[in-house]
Length: 293
Image (cartoon, rainbow, N blue to C red; front, side):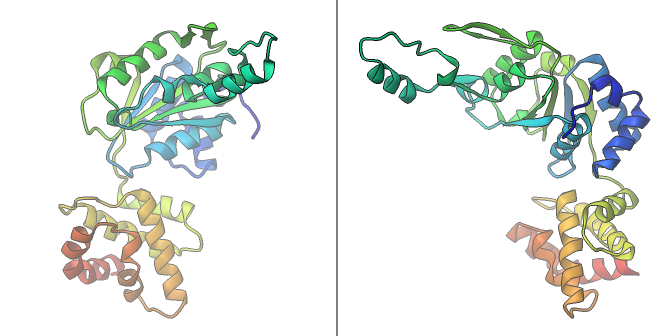
């Protein structure tokens, strides 16, 4: 993909929204403004919201917007520096020592260094966007490490010295808010809370992202999904599931299943929890019929 300078792309929030739409991501005014400010101010962008609202997709769209590769660091409980920063390939180092015999060998050469996401971005900030996905799933120790990284954009490798970014990296953090993040981390970022879109906006997203889904089908799905999300489900469906439901129901309808039967038969791509399915099944027919009316 062609690389673009951040200043050329982020000329205004409206320009950001327009370019994101070209990448099939619809951003409202507030999100487009947050992205614009994060890029122009050189600050990390923290996106919070429920699972499935489009946080990770926003990061992918931003990378495409800038013409850069997305480097994703998926957080989890117990993640440490070796998985986020770098580690040495000990097996290759041992083999090199054996093959060298009496000759000297630099076992701390680049060929033995395994660059993890943070180091990958530091080494080529103009070519990559860093996504720290679900930072709330990591522990406080890793959060402190990340804060130190975001403060100076450098990594100290005892055997090699300090590696600094030659330009300001673009960094996006996402959180499902399963726990509170440190205030120091929040203060360093441009913050935006992403909610589920309204029915009209979700219908637009479905038509943009789905295959051959009619406008009426997209609007019916958006209406039904909004109704379903309002119920006390363990795992409310995200936007991606709504798109999948519209696609699946359309395929079934073209194969001979009439509306609203096609929606009922395709429910497994929308609801992916047994208890949620049992809870919603008795009312699914009514929900779909009202959405189609």
